[in-house]
Structure formats: C-alpha cells, structure tokens
Image (cartoon, rainbow, N blue to C red):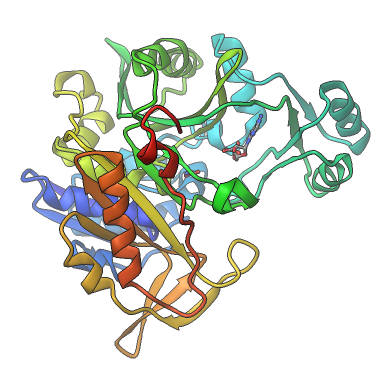
Length: 423
Ligand code: AMP
Ligand code: GLY
C-alpha cells in the first residue's frame, strides 16, 4: 500500500513514522512535511488547504490512501476532494468536520445525541455574552465558535477578560466551567451502509495545555502528553464509547454526514461525571506521538480499513504494555509569538538513547543546519515499562537537545509518575 500524509506537524511526523513501520505499507509520501519526516517519507510541495492540488498529487503518486492530518484542510473539504478523485481518504468530510469547525454545531450534535457536555449558550452579541456569563458565573469559559489554532478558548475568573475575548469573536459559545482531570480519547471511525458507524478507540491519553509548570499561563496547542493513564477508572474506555463516541457518530450518520476518520473526544472527569469539553476531527497533537510510539497494530491497515468502510473487519488497535511520555520543546516567545532560525543541536544524540523518539513540528533546514521554524518545535517521546520510566527517558532526550530560547515544561506526567493514582 502506498500512502500520503498531508500536514507539517509533530502529529504528521508520528503518523508517517508509524505508517513506515507497517509491513503492509510500501511507500510513505508526505506533503508539505518537515525535515524530520524526510527520514521516513518522500516529501512533496503542496498547499494543504487546496483539495484539488492534494487530489492531483495523490493521483500522480498513485497512492492508495491519503491521511489528512490537520483540522483546517478537513474543514476546507480536502478529504472530500480526494475521495471525489476515487482515492481513499482517512479524514472526515467538510460537513462532518464541523464537529471541530464549529463549537455551536458540536453542541447541537451532542444535544441531539444525548451526550453529556457543559451547559452552553451560543452568542452573537456582547449583550448576549454578558447575559450568559452572568447566568453561568465564574470561572468563565468563552470559546470562539470557529477554528482558532488553539487560541479560541479563554478560561478566566475575570469577567472583564471574558468579555474582552467575547468582543474579539464573531460568534461564540459561553459555557459552564468543568472541573476535574481531563482525558483525551481518540477513536478510529468508519462507516458503511450495511453496518452503520464503527468506532475503534485507542487508549486514553492526557495532554498539558498550559505553557508553564503547574498548569499556569496561557493555553497552547499542547506542551506534553502521556499514555496510558494509570489513574483512569476501570471500564472508562467502554463507557466513553457507549455514552459519547458511538452516539455522536450515529447522530452524524443519521444526518447523512457519516464521520470517517479520527474522532477526538476531550473530556473532563468532573464531580458530576464525565462531560465532553470538545471534539476534534483529527488526531491530537502531542497525544498522537506517545500513542503511536506504543501502537503495535499496523497503522496503514487500520486507517485504510476505516477510510473504506471495512473497519469492523480488521483487528482492533493493540498497544504495547508500558507507557509513553511526550515533552514538547517550544521556541522563544511561544505561545504569544514564536522564533525562527535558531540552530537546534542534539537531536541525533537524543535519538541514540534507548526508548527515545524525536518528532519534528516547527523545524526547517537552513544551509544544512536544523533550525526552529515555529512555536512548537519538537516533541521528545520516551517509552518505558511504566510512566515514571518513560518520563525519565523523555527528559533524558530533552536534556540532549538545545536551541536558543527553548522552553519546555518540567512536570509532564509528573504526578502520574510519582503516584500512579493521580493525574
Ligand atoms: P478546547 O479548545 O475546547 O479544547 O479548549 C481548550 C482547553 O480549555 C481545554 O482543554 C480545557 O483545558 C479548557 N476548557 C475548555 N472548555 C472548558 C470548560 N467548559 N471548563 C473548563 N475548562 C475548559
Ligand atoms: N492536544 C490538543 C489538540 O490537539 O488540540
């Protein structure tokens, strides 16, 4: 099987790396890709938002499967364009991707499907937003309705700050604050006329969204992640499939817009039970990096089966025992700004350590040297028999790598490593 991965991030590097390990995959192509992906894939130029261009590239390469990594191309209909050209695509249609593309749409689907989520108001004016804030009270949660590359959500005790964010959004959702630890659960989803929607969950992961240790500072795209969650209640995955994932994909199928691809449920284990914080229509970053580091099943077979309505026919995903921890190294100024052109050293030294994988996100080659080229630069993954070992391994990798202004959190998976019962 020949495959093409669309995107440039750490998630796409991990996808290309895992595809390259699948004995059933003969070729991995990536576009636009990044310097790290060049080790496992052949890179091509393409505008990832241009469906016709992506479909033409896929046709010219003769690939059997296109994997669309990021949300913006999915919302723009790139998977539809690939399918229209007669090539299998892993990734939802533009309509199904509205689950991520519009928070209001996601709320409407959850409502119709009876999926537990925070009480919310969709607002179009500042007056409506102010009324919603006062109705729900602090802490305030204000979300831009549309895609905002990790910058759409403000959680704050300050009514003023909440209103300022509301003023910057055209359409927004004000919702109830959810307490409790967060869990990311990803599921491969497929659909066919005869069987309806099939859901195959991966194992739960947790990401760390704030820039600083102790969950301080602004939200980012994600500063680290680990899997599995030793503290997760027994039966959590089955419960989430039954109460969240299956009802959601069934509702989309009922509307005539079945979901094919990766459904990402961001959940809070609140004092009032499980609640959905958000849906994404693609693999999460950086959770994908530790998850795929532990995946034992052939990824190409799973993604092709999902893309072609045969997911129920192949063995469900299997993960290695043990744990994986990803620590993101970000550039100076992130998440407010980012820095480009800082020379990165030590990646090979890190990768020479047992159990370390380095996935590139914001990197470039400049005159033969690896340099920073974005906010999140690298995700350093460590694997090991338990969270504590995996974490030590990941940080040993981080310690080998340096670039001017590098930032990373020092507490990724820290609590779970010290005391496996806590997050
Ligand atoms: P989202 O883009 O919806 O994932 O939001 C980004 C982050 O904001 C989430 O991972 C949470 O940490 C936080 N967040 C979002 N919604 C809520 C909520 N209702 N209550 C508390 N925190 C939230
Ligand atoms: N890990 C957060 C995201 O991918 O949105």
